[in-house]
Amino acid sequence: MTKADLEQAKTKMYEKLDFTKPILLVSGGIAGILVVIAILNIMDIFNMPLRADEATQPVKRGVNFIVFAMLAMLGPYGFYSQRKLKQIEAIEGRLPDFLRDVAEAGRFGMTLAESIVVASSGRYGKLTAEIEKMAAQIQWGVPASEALKLFNERVKTPMVSRVVSIIVKSSDAGGDVADVLTMVSHDAKETQLTEYERSIAMSTYIAVIYISFFVFLVTIAIINATFLPKMLEASESLTATGGDSGGSVDSPLASDLPNVVESIKLAFFLAAIIHAVGDGLLAGVIDNGRVVSGFRHSFLMLIIGFSILMLI
Picture 1 (cartoon, rainbow, N blue to C red):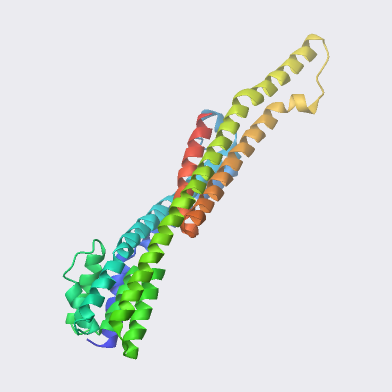
Picture 2 (picture 1 turned 90 degrees about the vertical axis):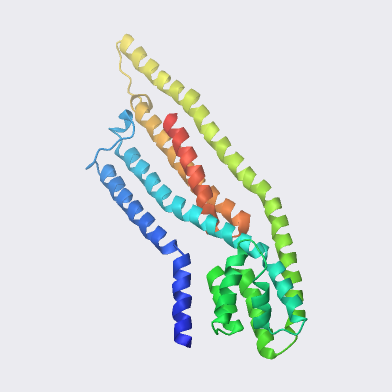
C-alpha cells in the first residue's frame, strides 16, 4: 500500500464518518429560505401570520420567520455536534485501558505494532471498533505510526492527538514504549477525572442560566397580563372621559397607546430571542469551552421562549 493510497483511504474514512457539511448545507438552505420569507413579510409583500392579530403587523410576522431560521440553523447542527461529542467521550473513556494493555503486551518483548494487534482482541466499548481498524491496517502492512495517525484523524480530539503524538515520537526515537504508554495512560485517566469533576461543577452554573431565563419569561408574562392591559384600560378611560365631557383628548400617549403597547410587546419578544441565543451559547462555553455546544441550549431556550410568548 503506497502513501497515496493511505492518504486516499484516510480521507474517505474521515468523510464517511463526518456529516457536518451536509447538515450545515441543508440547515443553511432552509434557514436562507426562511430569511427570505421573513424579509418579504417585513416588506408586507407576503402576509403569512401565525396568529390572526399579526395580519397587520409585518415586523412581527418577519421576526417569527427569523426565529424559525435560527431554529433551523441551531437545532440540527447543535444536536449532531453533541452526539459526536458523546461518541468521542465514550471512545476516550476507554482509551487509558487500551494504552495500559498495549503497554503490558510491550513488556513481553512485542513491538508496538504487535502489541496493538494483541490488544485489539480486548473489549473497550465504542473504542473497540477503532482499535480493530488499527489492527486490520497494521496486518495489511500499514506501519503502526501511520495507523495511529489514521486513528487520530478519525476521532479528532485533543486527548487522542496528544496521546498519539507522544506515542509516535517515542516509537520513532526508539525508547521504551511500554513505559511511555504507562505514563500516558495514567495521565489520560487523570485528565478524564479532572474533566468529569469540572463538568459536575459547571452543571450548577448551567442550571442557573436556565432558571434566570425562565424568570425573565415569567416577568414578561406578568407584565403582559397585568401592566399592559391596565395601560390600555387607562387609554380607553381617557378617551371615554374626553368624549363624555364634549372635549377631545389631544394627548399623544392616550391616542397612540395601543401602538405603544404593541411596540413594547415586540421589544419583549426580541429581548427573549436575544436572551435565548446568548444564554444558550454561554451555557455551551461554560459546559466544555465550546461555543458549538451552546447551539442545542440556544435551540431549546429559543423554542421554549417562542412558544410561551406566542401563547401569552
